[in-house]
Amino acid sequence: MVEDKWFGIPRNKIKWNPKINYKKCTGCMTCVNFCAHGVFAERDNKPLVANPENCIVGCTGCDDVCPQKAISHPSKSYLSKLTKQKDFSGCSCEGACS
Image (cartoon, rainbow, N blue to C red; front, side):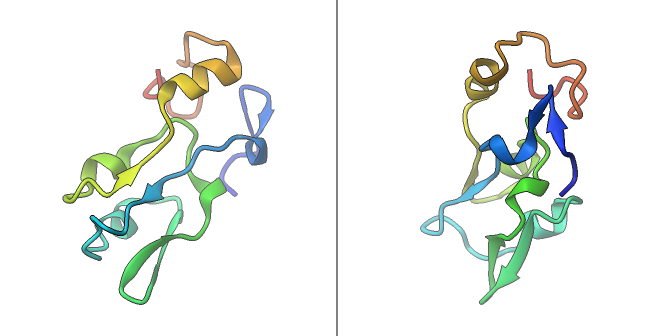
């Protein structure tokens, strides 16, 4: 696991990780190669979310690099509701999740 807490909330209590729409996924492995945190693995020539808690809270980078737009994350409003914070500049995403 990459981080233990996010804004004081235990990481394992935060439901923040990518979801793969296998109807859209072509198995290009762009997400596997992109993610430096080991969230994805390959199984049967398709990506798999193998380590969901390794996903950096607030990060949606793999959504953007997927050429088929087959990856999604929860809405950023989930994070606002979870923390009741409006400013995320102190989190590990360096404000990208705001």
